[in-house]
Image (tube, rainbow, N blue to C red):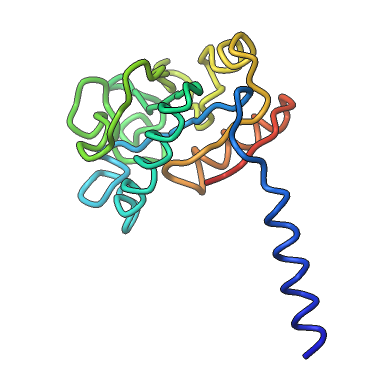
Length: 174
């Protein structure tokens, strides 16, 4: 019994170390697009279930005046990642398509910075830092802590978080 209580105490203490958003924080909403939600070309089962909570984070950051950034997969129709181009993925998140649009229930706050990735037809980009000015924008904003949420955690969120860590940001995955 004492070991269980000690483990729970350690868990609670570690939770207390989670950074709270402040003026040196930014929220990055990663790829919450129709093609990554149920019914989309690469739909994450239940992926749309995170949207109400993500909207709460967006409202909180907006009310505090903290930076909000949304990344999107924004492929040209002939993107190298598509099976038709000898890639591994079905056609998804094509520029201007329904699948490439942000999910309709995602509430974008005024002033959100939208960054498009994977726009080069010859280059894949899972991370929101690849081929975008994200790092430069965050540094210009004085960002030290990056709160990251979105879809899909096994590719785009994961690669974005790893790049953010390599670039020296403190990262909190929501």
